[in-house]
Length: 159
Image 1 (cartoon, rainbow, N blue to C red):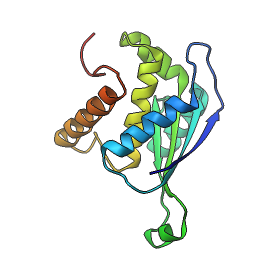
Image 2: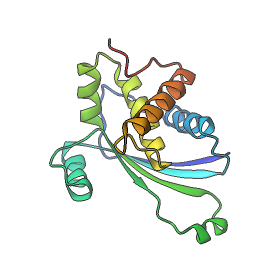
Image 3: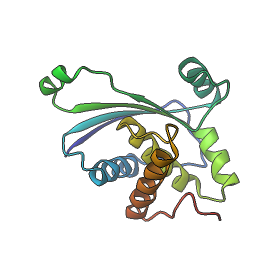
Image 4: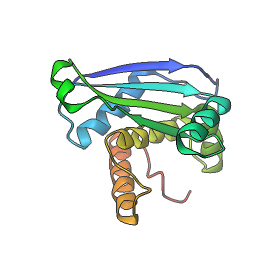
């Protein structure tokens, strides 16, 4: 499985060094864990509060910025065989929210960012923690397993 990654850093912070190789590894580990075998592509935009707030309001009706927004690809199934890689969609990650949450949750910014990558990628694949308690438990369990493969601690464990 090959991953094509488009990374746009509209917002950068000295408190979070984003390395393309680490981002790619987190996404590839997620895809491998849930047995995605096809070549895939994903877009990631790292944004500020204002951009996240605007998108969250427009697409989810929530009047605040949020850590990660997932926009799954809506390319028709019949078109997919014509493509070199399956478009999974786009993630919009609000760096200031990730940094604030990392402090609140007593985690490193890098660990929390990686968690948001895994979490968002699972959303792109159709996993949803807001539909039922069972779905939330399934998604959290996957996140814990994937993050462990990346050498990161359980993000839901109290620190």
